[in-house]
Figure 1 (cartoon, rainbow, N blue to C red):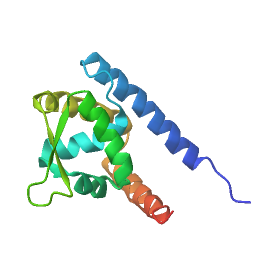
Figure 2: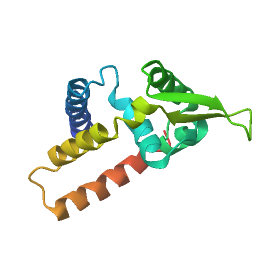
Figure 3: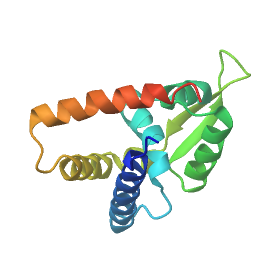
Length: 143
């Protein structure tokens, strides 16, 4: 029987990172935001407005999941949505002033997590880890 705790370890790493992210968000006045909002905010902060479908495709999540995440971001005042003038079937999402104003905090928290996750590792170890994790992620892509 082939067994190890790799998946458990990955889960614990994610849980630890999420604790830090939530703590940092709250300390910076962004209570209510969750780590699951991070990919959406990153896209909007660094690529500008997008349709819901573009966001779902970019982060590899179902459109219904993205809609739920966007609804919370809207309630918290970070985004706004409008009907796409070129295609009334789609919605364009953009950041509000509040959303744009969190860019500095987003970058600082991202750098904090990056430094923490790779603490004590060489550049070669980081590259090897990323290659292995990419392969592992592809192994589960068709699920």
